[in-house]
Length: 248
Image (tube, rainbow, N blue to C red):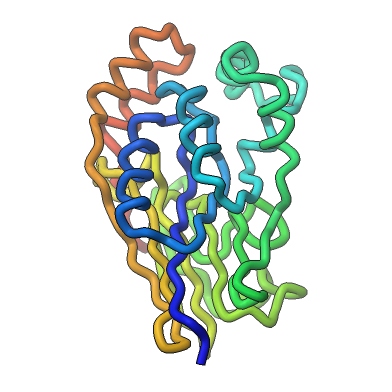
């Protein structure tokens, strides 16, 4: 029988050092055997340099998020609505760290191949495995089994698939396979300000996921953005008044 094991899974810190610090404290209290960071580490404004340093201190297995890829792109190649923040982050974060994050692997096989970790899907950080969000109706829906199979094509053989990206926690079991979407450390879209992470455990050979929420000083995070001169002050509203998008 496989030994019991604990994995801490965090995703989508988006530069919020205040939320990251609280989550990391909760992670350490759970004494995981391994920590996995699913990406989008610094694309945000609530003290992103300290958020980066906190995440480096985890010694986590890391994969690349979609916004991590933007850190190495020339400003002219960024979508127009992302250029101001991209320019600010270029002045805030070391070039070596921006390049490192932008070139992290897309996926990581863990625990002897039982677990596959990626940001969006194993193939790309820009797609989503478990959930689809309709930007017109502002509604979430769970993907069908055929959609799941399409996104896992070529990446079979794992017992657990870990993803982030959608800023909402979800867990699915398809046959003997556990699919886990971890909630975000920053910018949740379920109406709950608290930071999220996932404790993944193997007990008696069986895997299970616990989605955890952590209170942090979101007022201090908002104040840091306001006082820092960061270019996207709208992020304050994302932190203090998170969206509460419904299910279809």
